Image (cartoon, rainbow, N blue to C red; front, side, top):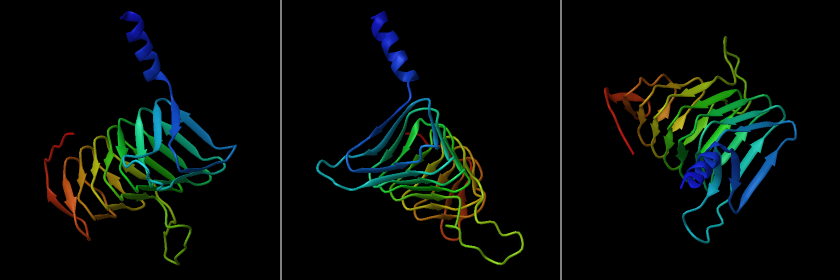
Length: 197
């Protein structure tokens, strides 16, 4: 029994990536991936599905996974040159999730994402002649936040701890902790909301 407990503790402390079937992987040799827990990429629930999952990590990009995190099939994870993606873990993202990191994205402990969620801290390198305009701004998503189906989180957003982003919501501003936001434009629907899974 003590050996089994010791083996389980040892296993929990290991970091590794499991690429499931039909994953396209492009990781630059000078990219840095730090795994303090397991990272399951492209996992499938429908047997026989050939839906592709893609991961791109460019030169000098950094990914840090601090605990177990699951990114299911149809995922598109791109971390561009010199960008940083920090995932605290104990959460996951459902089918067809997109994370496009050109600067800095941080997902707090226990963040959960529904189907077709998009998180992107940049606009793809397109410039606009506006004073103070930046092509990318960091995104920080607090612990135990829940991003519901089809929502989009844009550059410069900060989502507080325990917040819920409703389905199809476009998030372009700050989301207070323990609130539920919804709509386009985003509006606060409820405060002092608590959820569990």
